[in-house]
Length: 262
Ligand SMILES: [Zn+2]
Image (cartoon, rainbow, N blue to C red; front, side, top):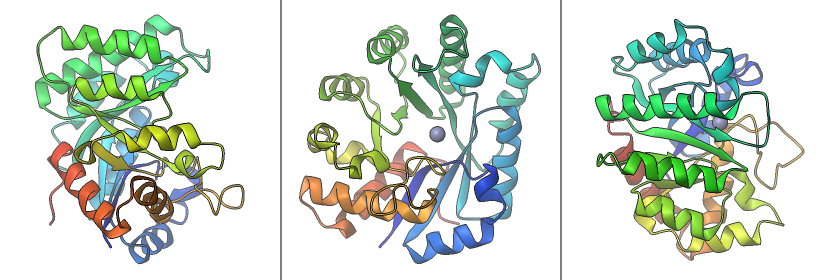
């Protein structure tokens, strides 16, 4: 079975200190490729270094909404420069977050907008974080859509409503599910998952966070565990895990077009 973990924070200290083992376990679980996602300029550089050293890893570079206020003036130009790197396949993670109030919302909005502008210039897709701000996110997406350029990207670790998913899909975005999908209380999310067209589905771990069942609360998350989320998603929509792996792999390669087999 082949799976792509489209969202892994491999530069996190819990994972980077045991990276060869983490990648080995991922291979054994059927993971063929993964995207190492940055949250700021420092982790962007680390993501690229990890991708250069490991051919199953690709990098996404960008500034997370919760860190946007901490970015120094030279950080954004560094992100822009990184987009020329052949192992960089996406921008982010970026987006909006009203759960934490570390970063003023206007700063988050401006940060999100500059990622969209960079996406239009480079054709690289955005990896979008949305937490407790579905209405604000849809407003931000409408503003971008009004510029008449296609919106390329994925709503990562999706936990919103079916209606929000529908609107994101209408804007051309993909929907990615993480470990939350496997939790007992996530019936609503599983109902939403059933409504997503197969050609817009992706899977991810968001590791080291959100460990899927059956390992939840037992272990920090890692790319190998994307297999549990994939199995749950396949069962939810009524197809085989193998088929789900093929579909989501094809989708990932279409969206993250720089990600080609070497
Ligand atoms: Zn993340």
